[in-house]
Image 1 (cartoon, rainbow, N blue to C red):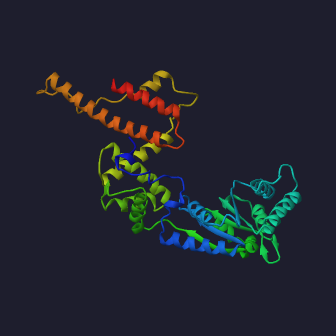
Image 2 (cartoon, helix red, strand yellow):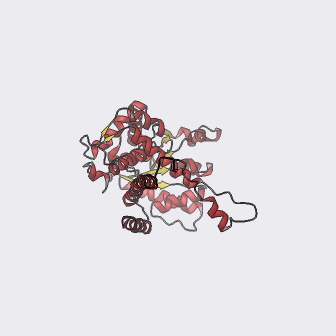
Image 3 (cartoon, rainbow, N blue to C red):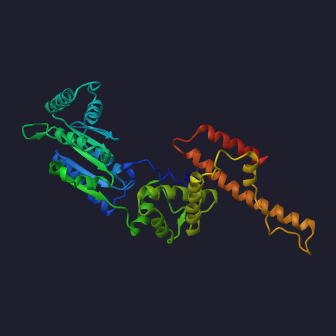
Length: 363
């Protein structure tokens, strides 16, 4: 059973994929949106949005792109890696549907300019959205600047939205970027959400999915969520998604501090498990006997035979502890199973294997 059914939600409110419909208009995001809108109206130069990972750059850009008049603006998106100047021009040409394989730089520039001129004659202009711009080399950034020079009379043929992480800010301020900076029409840096914005952010996303107060949230959890996520929307989404799943498995309609702490602890254990490495002795792998010995668990000292204990009492204690452990492990297993089922790119073989193991456990 998915948690959206348990809580009568229309959809998952904390999906990680950017969706402009879920944009929360914090003070920072409202200002950024105003800058983007202004830049779009000018139709020229560079508009720069920077911010840390998960602060909402892509969501903002997609909201702006959804608002453009598609009959007058052709919008294309580039996600960059470590590109040099010629590689960038080939990527731009290929994205525009132009010939680009094995062509020299001069031919690439001519093809791009011809395309832009043809669109201008049709009364259209081209908007280039460049994501992860901090990965571009100085020579590739210079090619972007040169592309912005294409114009007919006083009308620019190409405008660029540049989205970058924090590392792009010092790059922009470096001594060799003066001409590039002069082309920037508007720029804005996205900061994380403030602590007093976290509660409204969470409720905003929940309401969009039909939330009617089920589950209820204790007031103290929002400061804890802000502390753990540093106010970064993507991290808030990830944590809240897990918290709702935890609440569903626990069949709880009230989310409190203990629930959030339990999820944070689970995440920490999963990260620790993934990063732990076995220290091998010099000269090779552990021998089977040694490896097995390392997995031997010490006897539990609390289950010992005292003067007043009978064998039956000891057995009852052991059974009670075993049942408690099995219930706890089963709930954790169910959460893992549900997370795999909800994952957009879940491993089908792993999911089937877990389901099969669940059937074995119930026998």
